[in-house]
Image (cartoon, rainbow, N blue to C red):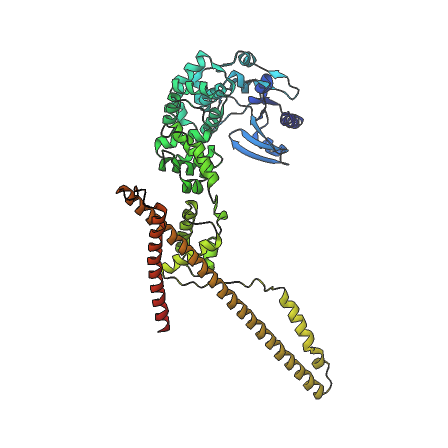
Length: 538
């Protein structure tokens, strides 16, 4: 109600400036029907230029011929000048009127032609109130003239059905059917504006029946297949879902409809996923890359198109089990890779990062900083890339430097030289400064040497940790491989009935096989390790 009350203030401002002004269209209609008011349209005898002058204290935007949008206390109001001789907003020229009744005669439907004053008094020249009570959509005047002057009214009538559950009179129904081709001349921005309201309507199913029976769907670009498909296999769809169905059926996205959705990029991703995976068999990588919401919507579209069954539970289950849900969750990122060698090719870093993500998602690699670091180091070594860690000394603080400079300045005692009165005093002052500078320089050298020694110690310590971790990882991998070999051997022995003999101990045999394999592998490892040591000594 606050929205309408602010609109009354606009009416009073226009009236106080010598003009007539009324609520029209949805505002007055919704007051009669006791419905929420989401948009306020005002008709006035003031011209657009006069409206701009009156409301120069706020934002005024010219939308189309004869209509401006005034932002009043953060609310938008649509103010149109009285018209005569042309019902539509899409004509190249328009004739203004100073007469309310002439304007009402140029409205398209009776329920859209009820004017309401700021005191809530109604002016109903075409019995729109009666049509509201009877829930009828009735044209004012001749259908051909109405729709020639205002092609958008072809869809506006459908919108009244979708939003209000009204019915067409016979004249309205046959008038739209006979003039439906005029829809091709409608400006696309008005087309998508009305379509959005139709698709969101509470009684859209009834509106869809009319779109099909009146054959309007054949004239709406890119949406013909979607309307027909939805009619034959009805499901209530959001605007985004309806457009996705249309684009998938057409096998291409019509960019001109994207202003109808709040997140066009998201719609593109959903479309790509639907086309790429029509069965909606999404794995961890798909759900990680696209996100749960996009995967759920893609599955919904594939279900609507009868290409897939519902996988909502599976998608949610996989998402909850993901070891990482975004790049930020990764324990070792591309920034850490660059710390190993700052001169790495970005393409190599991206490739390694993608491999890490894949392996972590499929549990081939633990999401652990040290484990991933060993994997990265091995990957770089396989590519013959040197590891040159770029360390930063976080113990050093820049703010400490000014304190040292201040201390040095005090010790240099410039005043001893400046205030000296004899050569001996000058000589003594300069000698003192030289000693101070020597001491300071030695202090800085000692400090840098300590830092270098500490970094070398940390580097050796880290290398030892990496070596230990690498050995542990390798031993674990060897053990897993040996366990697999032993299991395969036991299965083979079972097939030839070797293990079926009760006198043979399966566990003992397993242990012996495991020992044979481990001794052989360790022997090979010792042999090659010794050879590497001999080569280093040579």
